[in-house]
Amino acid sequence: MLSGFKSQRIDFRIVLGLLPLAWLWFVLIGNVGIEWTLNPQYSYGWAVPFLCLYLLGQSARRNAEGGRQKAENQKQFWLPAFSYQLLFGLLAGLYLPTRLIQEANPDWRLVSWALALEVTGITLCLLRIMLGSAGFQVSGFRFQASTFVFPLLFFLVAVPWPTLVEFPLIQTLTRLDVSATCELAGWLGIPAVPHGNVIEVATGDVGIDEACSGIRSFQATLMISLFLGEFYALGTGRRVFCVAAGFLLSLLLNLARLTVLTWVAAHKGIPAIAGWHDPTGVIILLGCFCGLWGIGAWLGRKRPKAKAKSPKSGESGNQQTEARSSEIPACRLPFSVLMLTGWLVLVEVGVEGWYRYHEARLPAPVEWQVAWPVNNTTFKDLELAPETRRLLRFSDARYAGWQEDGLGWQVIYLYWKPGAIAQHMAGEHTPQTCLGAAGHKFIGGKELQYLTVQGMKLPFRFYQLTDTPQPVFEAYCLWDDRASTRVFEATSVTYAWRLPPVLAGQRNPGQRVIELAVTGLPDQASAQVAFQKMLEKIISPVH
Image (cartoon, rainbow, N blue to C red):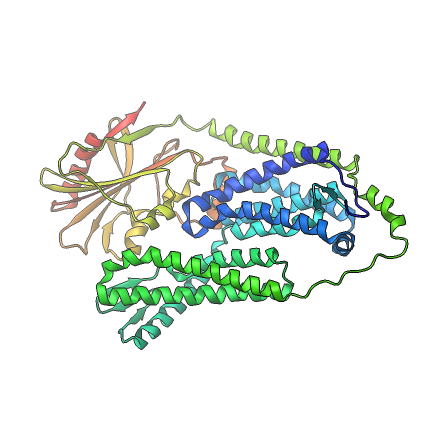
């Protein structure tokens, strides 16, 4: 047992205090976990909670080994006790509007950041109120409120960056990578010309997507460098150096990767890139990890050692006072915990009641499904691009093509489960936006028309591609399972568009999209007749 600190069992009040905090972290991880699962750029996020727990244990053990002097040094960084009560109340109050907005916009990154900062702040304030300034010691670990600061703040590295920060950084990194890669390719005797985010070589164009921009390796190395800084207990200057070294290392390794891919494209053709893309990505992540670990270990060995301080006279006389201060005040914990628990219950019941009240006034869901012509000998499943899956975040999808009556058909069906992802995911990506982004020229799409299929009135927009060898006609339908009116329009995800679903009390009720493309017809009128006949064959209501 350390001198001056009372070793005690974990009080039931501590467990009681952890229950509302456990709920808050459950809500937070459930929110950001959507991005961790669907966006490979943030897949490392699933490891971060476990790293936070490891750092917490290491910090608590370090506190126990450091003894009384370390505790005295940490106390000076804390504000007066009443400040934590005020901050605690403020953050708890902000949790209500955040949850209300987040329920209708679970993918909005600004809401994720607001939720993360509120949950982290509430946790730190409540721990400070519960543990006081001294904390407690158990089984060789000594926990103070300050023990939790870095492990909890470290969680923020896994929160997806706001688009207004991430997008400009991606564009900047991409332009730097394209310019530097073309310069290096020239040194290697490979003619390469930059065109925005594309590198033109003799065999074709090498596109630089978000993953190749280096943003993924930069974010991963930021997480690793911050972890190693705490793991080796580096000083502030050394931690900054470690982060800067990680950024430089990720930039150089990603540049080397792009140079290799450009060399492969120039010598083996554009299709050969597919076999090198993922392996080189894994190599640069491993290279960043190993390089940063070496830098962290080197900095850890060279850090100055703290000088042991001899006990002051009369220190033993203060042991009983400090032991008493390490006990958890019984009057503080129940009030703070009960207040937070009651408030969280009110928030969750209120948010759920708000949306259920409005959703009860929506019409009953009308659902349908696609009966795929799998018995057709020409039927084959086609692959959706990984970028499409990442952007649209649908719950289920199928993309297939076949021949019938001399016509070539391709059909895409997408489905979003109720409550899974915000409803604007489907409305943001229509042919009107996606065809233009892909460089196609087309006409149509302005007039909304209805086709009656199996007794259901489906809203469609029709398009014709004008830059293909033969005419290609497309029909697109966005269906809201519980919409009061069956209309749709291409939407832009702006801040102003995020709030109406909250005020209307409408979460994602479930959406589905069907997009048909047909070739072998001379004009739009005959294509529309063909669409009607095909829809009657493959669409069936769900009763």
